[in-house]
Length: 602
Ligand code: SAH
Image (cartoon, rainbow, N blue to C red; front, side, top):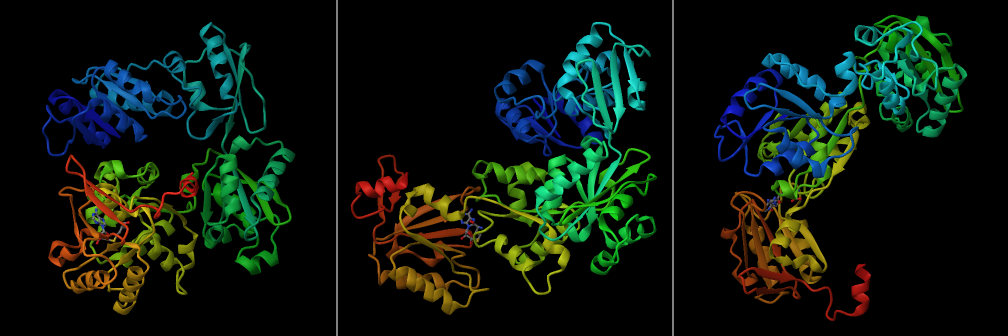
């Protein structure tokens, strides 16, 4: 969560809350000076950034300021993150947005800490001390679109009769009457409901599934839907889809989970074997194959084991899939059962600047629970991951770093592995794939879900600083001889030189290796004019960025370090200094800009 403060009074209040609630404090640079406060100089931008992060935002300032600045970026009420206005002195707290996404709950917590009354304004919350459109975990509202009409009648004085059991409903102040004109039904059978009738489904049905490798998602979804219909059960009563850990990466299981909007969780073999005696349809064939006599029934039973309950729907089969359902005696919390499929996002964070990161990369970092990366890169994204579990590694520990990230994801965690630039360019992406592809790769490693998020690579950043040197054919060569034999590197330099590519040299020098760059320059001088433009781009997008341009004949190895990207133009690359002193270095696309060449682009 984020706190936003404009002055020292706000700081004291925010600190009081931060000790209890955690979170990051953002302070107006001119008025708040404190080492642990993230500074900003534009309140409107800071408010919008915090809001865009999707995390709860507590703004210690006038509600009007928040409303005015966030108005242009508001989404719809179902997706907005919680936003609260809090008086600087802590005397009033007002949930402005996301009342049903936790803002009301958060306002109540804050009010309790500050010993004040929260200013809750959502209709059913204030009047009836119960949140009808945000039932507690374990219940799902079947007809949310009827809520408005229902609450309107309630406000007009109608009474309510409740069918079924739900403590939270009876604990509120709803005007209950056995002959109420309004009805609320709690059940696990499919029911329509309307503006005078709300239907809540208790989430106490555990769905166990099994299927053959790469079974079609549609087949599994159809089998589940038909089974629910045949048994007169509502899909909204499903609490989770459960299976054996061998199936952790089974696409059909995840597609079904997404279809029914429930989590997919996986048990190890021992947990399923513990259910052997309770299976209604044990199969010797299945036992020989996977070690337990029925995956679907055993998984459903394992899910309800802790809170009591039994098999409700015995195994049903389609051609390549099976499903079964168990009913729990109580509400189930699926996050406590088995493991989810772990996720590894391999994220390119660009050269360094926050505004050179892609939206997708930022979203992946925000969603991850654990961030793994080289210490310097973690500092570059501190604004996004400060309150997360960050695991910093030293340079040179690449394999250990990637292996640790994969192992964490394989144990069910949601992990982001961070690379500078693009994660697929001389970076962790290929190493991760390689580690998953070895003969001795542990089987559970390859079951993680893997996602690569794009980043701006150093050569793109270097190019845009001086013009468009990559406007025609180019290549990238790493001069690091740690993993590539020198002969191979030299052969590639010769090939690039003779083919007249623009060349981006990554890892141009190291402390130990300084000769390859000199060799490259000398070889290139045999094929290109002495005044071929060279770009030395150091610390791009980071503090102390330096970008220089010079003729190839003047390239000195001592001007280059490990943090530099060296780009050498082709024989066609032109360099011109513009009137304002900036560079215009570009490689035209052809000798003559013919119409055909231009139309190709679009
Ligand atoms: N994945 C990265 C490359 C990592 S290899 C990317 O796509 O950019 C490391 C080399 O990249 C460095 O030796 C340097 O040559 C180059 N590099 C990476 N970040 C840089 C930056 N911010 N400024 C200049 N060069 C950079």
